[in-house]
Length: 80
Image (tube, rainbow, N blue to C red; front, side):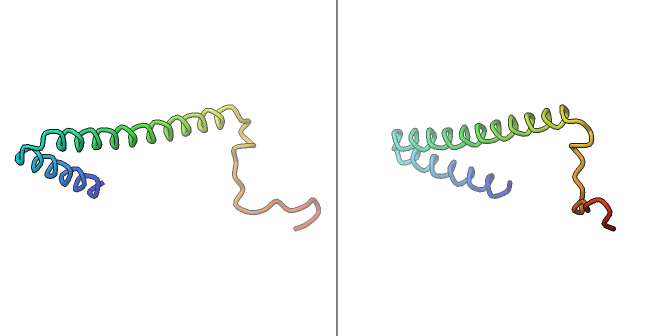
C-alpha cells in the first residue's frame, strides 16, 4: 500500500515537472498513463471480487458435508 502511494507521488512530481517546463503534451501523456494503470488495477480487483462472489455462491449451494475440508485423509473402512 505504501509503495503504491509513493509511486503515485513520483508520478505527480513527474507531471508537475512537465507542466513547469511547458511540456503540456508530455504531462497529458503521463496523466493518461496513470489513469490507464489505475483503471487496470480496478478492473483486476473487480474481476477478483466477482470470482470470490461466485465461489461463495457455489459454497452456499453445496450440501454442508461437501463444504467440510478434512485435515487428514479418510481411512478405508475397517482401518484404524
